[in-house]
Picture (cartoon, rainbow, N blue to C red):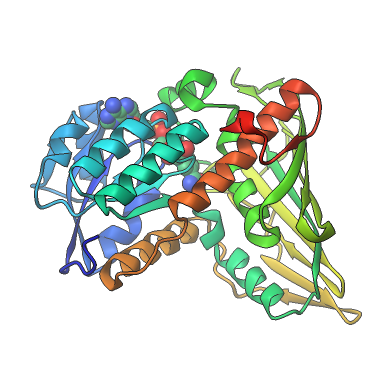
Length: 364
Ligand SMILES: NC(=O)c1ccc[n+]([C@@H]2O[C@H](COP(=O)([O-])OP(=O)(O)OC[C@H]3O[C@@H](n4cnc5c(N)ncnc54)[C@H](O)[C@@H]3O)[C@@H](O)[C@H]2O)c1
């Protein structure tokens, strides 16, 4: 692997759709990076983004293979629909680019294995981009737990609650279309796609699940988008820990957000105390982002940056520092695969109506 890059690190963005706006924030402000090329099969969209991001005179491509042929590109940010992750990432490996690949790394475990082994063979750095684990209230919660302030963690309850918002950003129709096609998305929009972040949180705080049970229903949202909700997913972790992820769509729940109309809430119970993370994509009013209860008292953490974009900024910055200092990224391919396995287990459990062991060979 190219251990130490020269500054500025030259970045190519493949896929300039909805989420790319949050990925470029750090690259545009970090003195150690420079965006040198963008690509989107919808070339007009890519051109518009260059205007939005105030970037002129940089290379622009319709075919990602052309971007990847550019010698000067050190690092590529892969932000395309899920079914394309594997092909784009393999081509990037072939071209010896360092890779930041959005979650889920691919559609199944055999694709994940191929990606990990090809990256290793080619000695290419591979980061699976997961932002929730870089969200400041989550980082602080992990720190508090690691300090032993709630004792040993016993359970995690995660709630994903989409609703409506008059302040949310606009999501283009084509960003919804591929998510409604399981061949392209790999699974449901709330369990497999957004749920990936929640599996990552469960993994971060509790470790890999040993067994997963899921019941996944269906609801039509007001815009006719089919949600895989209500859903309830239960986890059994090592050392007698448990957890769940509950997903409900509340069509008339007013959510304060600049991004997706969704509220996320987490409660972690330990032997001595409890932690609440009170927001994620958006928030219900302005609750303290993090609250700790121990020794009969509540402590509100009001000063933690809690805008959702901070999770993207931190995750991107972490990878830049890894590349500049020859460090291992978070998530690694193997870690990304563990989380993918949890999402696949949930989908399989719901379709079979019984719990699934995480090492079930059908997940491979
Ligand atoms: N971390 C998060 O919270 C988060 C949030 C949203 C999306 N995502 C992930 O980001 C990725 C993109 O999601 P999105 O919401 O931006 O989707 P999107 O549909 O808005 O953007 C995808 C872009 O890829 C382009 N594209 C499609 N095929 C292409 C090809 N062959 N070559 C080049 N460009 C191509 C499309 O034209 C589109 O502009 C997905 O992996 C998704 O899971 C992550």
